[in-house]
Image 1 (tube, rainbow, N blue to C red):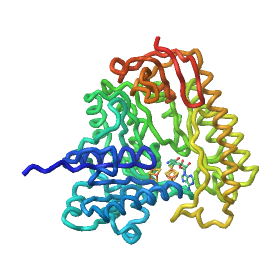
Image 2: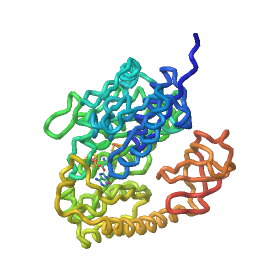
Image 3: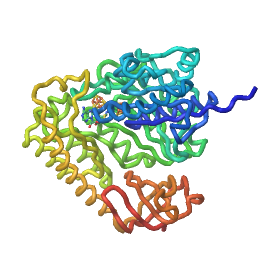
Image 4: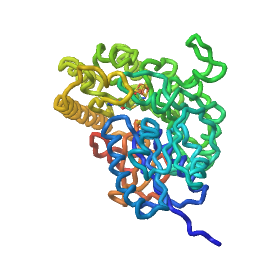
Length: 446
Ligand code: SAH
Ligand code: SF4
Ligand code: F3S
């Protein structure tokens, strides 16, 4: 008897790690015979891969889930899965809140999806949130792009920033071995991928848990070594990496980035606040002077480097003056891109219990003010590109104008220009910039 194929749909919230995890889980589902459905309402299996970094991210998933839970009441064959960081944070409690759920699984269980589903298809409601060592996965992820790919190099985070849920939901640091990372990169090159983004919540921590590392703080194998090790994989034209922590960012890494021509001159180094007392209460472990030093060093070695970062406004106790210090830093550094967020108290984090929380009004006012400045500075950084020739890796057609293609510059700016995607996809081409916007560029192929 032939079975009609079952369809699946995944909705992904949150960061690049979640996106990478979703691609893994899609790969597993396809290996099991499921087929992708764009429309969740046509799917027999729905997976929400969730984020809990801020309250609004968490709440979003409940409204999505509510709809599908109602659908399940009419269609008991529908399989409902909640994965990712909300799943890890809430665990069993989710089954009380949404009894229609079949499977609740934390991020460390990503590559166990097939086993967990077997349990579900045997009629069980399954919760998988215990911490575990992540073993290498042999399933091919189903990747969104055929040009750029994410590769995890380290899972988890051992920092204890006082606002952040990530260590609670992603567990302790676990570095993959250099050899298995290189194998994945080489396989991607064989499949025609051109750009690799290496991922870690604190990528500078890479290697410190690997055997052979010392406990004296000097590690035998670190992220800089990994960059040198991966650089010669033939076929790969670009490497990017994220996220860097200012506490561990070294001059040796800066030198390596300057020296290795496949490494994009683009750095994502969140500073979170421009005020030393706030940084201290955030538990970040560096000062603003140190942060400036890093940026100065990067610009000394690579004057054209693009810098991006994350910042939080309205942290508990942040005074207007301290917020001004953040604005001052943004003004002086002039980021190419800056992700801003109003502080959101998170369960299980120290800062959520402090009494000096700021009002919603103050937080949103500061967010608006900083966003205005971010736009102005990014527009200025973009304008510097006007008339320049940029190397662009072409990724896909411009969805808003099919006569154009879309790619990214070395500095990670989206760039649009007239051209045929069939000829240009996956190629690095020279584009003369003719128009700029804060976060994107337009140009002509030269
Ligand atoms: N590992 C990265 C960031 C991970 S979370 C780092 O250390 O920088 C992504 C971003 O979300 C953070 O950089 C921070 O700016 C923001 N963020 C994290 N927790 C938050 C909270 N409780 N409220 C508001 N923004 C938060
Ligand atoms: Fe969160 Fe800090 Fe770890 Fe980044 S370094 S994930 S902000 S705890
Ligand atoms: Fe969100 Fe989890 Fe990433 S909380 S930002 S999806 S690590």
